[in-house]
Length: 399
Image 1 (cartoon, one colour):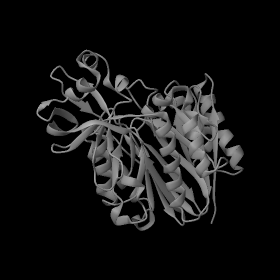
Image 2 (cartoon, helix red, strand yellow):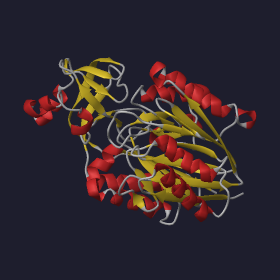
Image 3 (cartoon, one colour):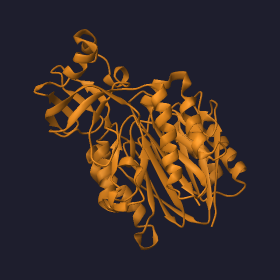
Image 4 (cartoon, helix red, strand yellow):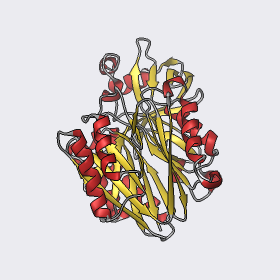
């Protein structure tokens, strides 16, 4: 059994050439024809041409990927628009890929279809792990996760990240083999004799008193402690500053001040991104917060973010039970990139201290992350995948 992985990166203006060059870079480093490839790309490139460029090199290898809000490789965060490719050649892992379309028409059903499409390809329908890459601009991310679990089982190890579009919040893209989708979720199933570990941390710190959700509907928070939900920001920022949140995208202004919710199975609060505020002061979040939940306003610091990123990576390696990491995939929220600014490389360096600086690494800045609460995958009965915000998720494959 062996797991070989390599990473290629390319920049430039010609979409087809950039895709082909990134794939060729990865394959040259691999030294073999790949059995599977993962592709992360900026939306600055024509998506069809970029993917055609990748496929011209990778041929019939199983391919999944998505557009991003920034690419990450072994060399750190990309400094400009790029295409990143991870190529696998394995004897121990079989890969299966599928898609669920029309998230806008039914997020849960799209998740169910993607996972079912993957599961039916595997011998006896058995998988060890599942990676998902959904669009969450057209549907509820938590519902997509639920749909995946409907097909695979409530405690199945699921990891992934929501596609991005360079912080435009307009349209994201998903890739399956030679096709580009939008408003969809693609999935990659893995089966075989290998080990994997997942680390999940965010490091955001609660401030102020907890508030109870007294009125909510899905992802819309109407009232906290009987008052308009916007009050949690007014109390912290002042009414004048909070009023700005009604006229500008909350995702831009409050990206470093998310909301946190207590959940069983995690030593950290589960983060929820606020997206918009209406005239009545109701806040629409990236995923639902149920009535009766207690939430807190959260603040972030670079120091804490670096610390927990390394802890998450250490947790992922620990779950390999002594096996050496052969490939690492990172799903890192765009909010963390904005928190670090030009220092975003510090977080990736901290992760590499734990997984090994030479270990092939690929990832991207996301619009939401999917992973078991607390990164639990050893005790399958305690493995509870969820939709996260503003979190770093690290998946390590080993042997």
